[in-house]
Length: 549
Image (cartoon, rainbow, N blue to C red; front, top):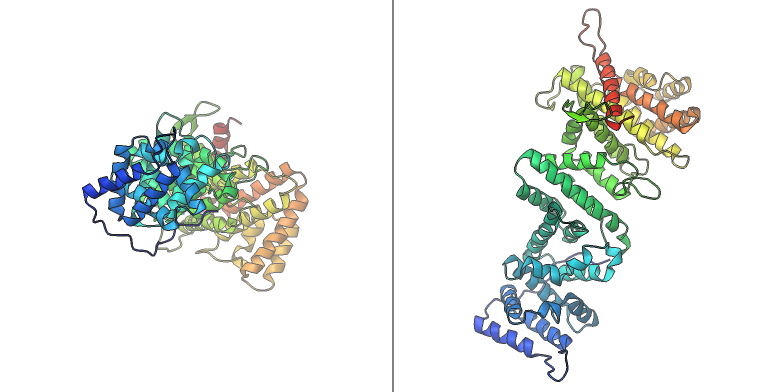
């Protein structure tokens, strides 16, 4: 593992060298190691002299020297001024750490100032050797690039370089040519910077530079995310070499941002991309176990549990009726939205191997809680602008349809059956808790609805009654104990795996409906229960149409 960049305590020399002096130093460097009697000069000797001179100069002067050297010796980057030579000499002690840092910052400054082109930087950093293979298959080049950049620490010049160069690499994924692993390399540079917001800024910069209207931006984001995702497969498999998963890096970085239009838009694009994946997608699911990739699942959990979570749930719950084809030829967008929301739940809240699954469950519960509170007339100051009865009902129906689809698509086998059942039972219980006005814990107010959610199963009813004997409200530990007990009953009574999925699917639907007002003879219009139930069934039909089932 290469260490993270750190501040260099020494103060760099001042920039006081004249143009004539720079030219003279450059010529002296090029004269070093000349061997007219053999074909090849002493490149090591020249590189050592170059390093010594770079350490003496200030950052701007060092960048000027680099520019003059390349003007005088157009073949330097293919002969003596190469990263493998510099790295080997640094490893052997012939180039000191201070000298290596001076060279690194000089390259960064020269690039920032336009004295060193993008093509030259790619050649020096061996990008062309890294773009077609995973880090594990080019461990030397990968390690040399990271060590060289990290030698520059987190100086302003180096941080500016990292961000600009990463954007240049990522931008290539928009073009027609195959970008290979360049997106992965771009986000590895961001990850190594020590700035957790850099990856998000780089992605946003590339998107904004490529498109101005929302439709075009959506297409660009989708293309970029697929490119990052494809690169992440090789990087995920190269973790022993110090690689970080680029998609994980990007999602975690975006999850840190505020809930502005820009970051909400990017977050929704990420959620749609992730939610569209099935368990044969090697970006999100391990190709051997078919379990979700842990780091990406945790990053997605951070996204939906963070500032953009509300925007993600809201956008993926939109009842959009524009046609998208499907089995009958007239499937509508809201069916695809439900599939994507369900896919997101599979990776996060329903994922028994996600150590942060409870955070995802909490995020879903809070989102549902707000809709149920609105339908129950609870006074709150944080309802979304424009929220009305129809919107709240549609949102819950979409959540119900998405959750049921997620359960049906889950990869449950005998090995993870018990853990998966516990995770799904937790979801049902948490949704049932949203029936308590304003939020709350299991109490006499919700016990009837909770029992109904589990089909009024006698054994489960007994567990709920027994739990409530200790008090009208339960602690989090008592709730977890109750969840585990219910899961054991569900798992034990369900029989085969298909029956288990069908059983839990019915529980999910019931949990969405808990606490919703039903129409009365005096007020038949206030029947959110029936409206959401029918809406959930419509969503399920539309999901089947989109899937072609």
